[in-house]
Image 1 (cartoon, protein in one colour):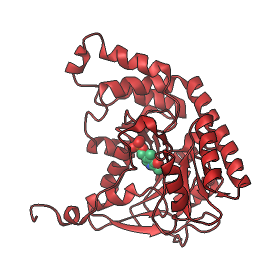
Image 2 (cartoon, protein in one colour):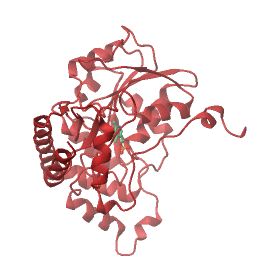
Image 3 (cartoon, protein in one colour):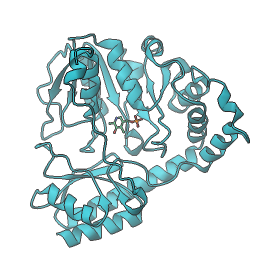
Length: 350
Ligand SMILES: *Cc1c(COP(=O)(O)O)cnc(C)c1O
């Protein structure tokens, strides 16, 4: 089909995690979703925005999502000119590539990490360079000076769960000629984050999502924090009405209810620590995780066998066929009850 660009013809397309149609009959621990509902204020705000007859939907939403930039800026300690809202953080990851890298130019990221970066690069016709991770969870062979236009650092790493130290991220920022984009999709479950580095280094961008820690994967809400010059460039590229009215109402309500948010995150962290210890007790290797998931390897290093055993019991976790990851499983942290049932099933499977 020569009507299409060569790179689009050649690409595979991203395959999202499996979402079973009969979702209610599964214990779903495969997409790092939050087991708790969003703040009750989110539902109220969405219904209020909709109104009795839905007439609010006749008119376009705020193009800039200005109130959300102000709320997020206040929460994270930045002027709103340092914040951009996104239709899921995936949107802003895409626009960061489009802002920095032209066709044939290079971006980099660690492997394993979030495989969607590769798809976004392919669409843009950008070359990709991947770096492995060392046993000490450093970027293997990272050059003294990395000349690529952009480097994505997923911290905490997905799917392994390890967070990079702020000192190490700062060292990488110094060694990058282009942007260092710290994808902090899971930072709300971690002990530290890289926000202070955005203030210190002109080339550091932090991205966040409300999909995981705020239980809003279904609303598509993310954001980026960076220098105003970078934000202004991203504003030129994005869809001008990128966040719909209901999403904006949901976002504001979710960010405002910090007490509820902190309570949910604390519970997930507590369950994560308990589940990790229990799995270690039955011989699993569990990488210490700073996310809402763990990467766990059974004693026989046959992740697929345990995946199949759990699948037969209608517990859905994530197994990657990639040879670097096939020995283990990525398991999302659900409620304490769900993790109890999962642990019992894993003991049965052996
Ligand atoms: C889930 C996830 C995203 C995407 O977040 P959305 O806001 O749902 O688009 C980005 N990066 C990583 C590492 C993720 O795990």
